[in-house]
Length: 97
Image (tube, rainbow, N blue to C red; front, side, top):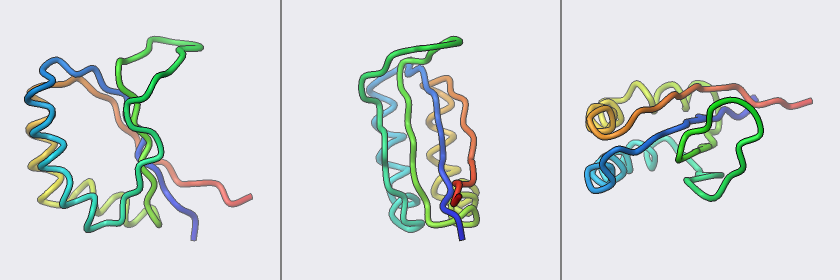
């Protein structure tokens, strides 16, 4: 079964409030086995419009990634994030070729 990834591009408007999002999301990430591969480090924009923060989170499966996103814990965190950041996120299935 291929792994799956959350890929998020975020512009944080309120860094202090964003900390609340991170803390509120933590239980969902722990419950669904999230592993952060990239979390806001330095980047170089090669094409298109960049955002200030880029995050890649690995999950064991597409089901785990989707269940995490849809969980009550993450939805509570998402509600906070939407007040303090603009973001795009996709969940993508990994390639096992």
